[in-house]
Amino acid sequence: MAIGPISGQGRQFRFAMSAMQRQVAFRYHASVFYSWRYAGAVPERLLIAPIDLRTADPTAALDIYAGRFVFSGTGVDAEGHSIFDAVPPTEEWARELHSFGWLRHLRATDMAISRSNARSLVDEWIRTSGRSEPVAWETSVVARRVIVWLNQTPLILDGCDVNFYRRFMKSLTRQVRYLRRTAYDGPQGLPRLRVMIALSAAALSMSEQQRFLKQASKWLDLELVRQILPDGGHVSRNPAAILELLMDLLPLRQAFTARGSQPSRILLSAIDRMMPMLRFFRQGDGSFAHFNGCGDTASDQLATVLAYDDVRGAPLTHAPHSGYQRIEAGDAILLVDAGRPPPVDFSTDAHAGCLSFELSVGRQRLIVNCGVPIATAGPLRRLSRTTAAHSTASLNDTSSCRFLNRSWMGDWLGEAIIAGPTRVTSERRRENGATALFMHHNGYVDRYAIVHERRLSLSDAGDRLDGVDSFMTPAGAPISRSGKDVFAIRFHLNPGIQAMRTGSGRGVSLQLPDGETWEFQTDGPEAEIEDSILMSNSRGNRKSLQIVIHGIAQHTPRVAWMMHRTAVGGRRRAAPTIADRRTDMPARG
Image (cartoon, rainbow, N blue to C red; front, side, top):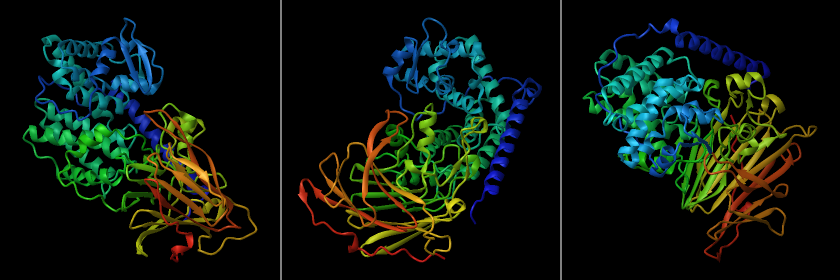
């Protein structure tokens, strides 16, 4: 069933009402009128310090010691004053500061002066309690800060006096009680799950918290059941969310063991299901594919988490609940987004990239999606979520999903997906020495009465990818020739790949950085070479190129294309043609 305007408006209304209810509840639960909840004596001591799996950079400690704090590409100098009194350049910078994740860099130096500096900065925050910056008391920021303080207690408390210890425990207890009161009032998805992890870690670390631990474990289990899908993916469909969660869940599992407690079966099962998904989303260069808000991969963190994988088996080929397909053949890896958008409450970072794919050859990426820019790049971030920023087909320069943005409501609630494909099918077959995927989605049916069908076939040798993009009516019949719906089939190239039109005009020669060459061919309209961009949330954006096939769906309802390896190490190979492999789409039921 297609989503019509009423359905989209209904989702928008329900999303707005849900967000409004959460904000009203948050204001009440965070206020002094509700502070009696969970009141009591401050725990006397901390029993354990959960480990921190995030890698540290000792050189960053020098900047911190000098009073310079660099987050999200922006630096601020304290200039002799408290850094917590400084005017933050961006909200993202303020969140990084008040989350205290940077304490790990001070711990990495293993110097007495670093311990003293860390203790002084924590004490400054305790004395001001983040009063100057509202983001300091966002539930996700408080949760991150609680986790970090618990992880870094050997750094913060080593050599401290009794008065500081009491102030620290009082502040930590205050923040934990704040999270207990507001746990279900913040944003859904990864931020809420992090709150539950923080509460469980606090209950395990503090003395005399048996009842609290039972409650926190129950809340964590409920949220894991809600957010971790049966195949191990996250409900947001963001591959990076899996790595982020495992960085906190693995230490939590060890904390249970350190306290002599048995982690719940739900927690253990979630970790066991998530670990194989790390390998599922990896491309040939070791980083994750760019789907649904996944930006640059922290390779050091990924290597650390993978060291905990006892199975180390081959990656899955199909993640049906997450909505992804993977084909690995020869030295080529093909990853395809073949799923519906996530639920609206979990879609504020999701992309309109249905049926898009990424292809890597060896350790080189060939076809990519455009990635994710830094959080403060508002217009560019919106662009990165459009269908045009993905290696798939778009109609009339619109996206297959509709976003809640460019309005006061979008700024207030977050730019969620309020309409998109409701039916996405994916069928996997073996044929003619290749693995083929037959897919379609109905994201354009409500506006243009057109279904996009895509067939991808990767040869067993990994040296040839065939594709067919078709535009049909929902019933599978040819569309009326009276309209003029313009399509654009895009193939974004990784930076560093050189592209040159071949003599026929229907082909493009692609040279990879190591000298290997591939050729792209199409039997439809001529392939154009246009500018593109690979966005990065850590390394800076880079210019790139894209191959684009423009046409009118009514005139050219079916476009076949293929790309194949033509030379390795300077040695030419025989050039196949599109007709060498059957490219019929299966009938849709």
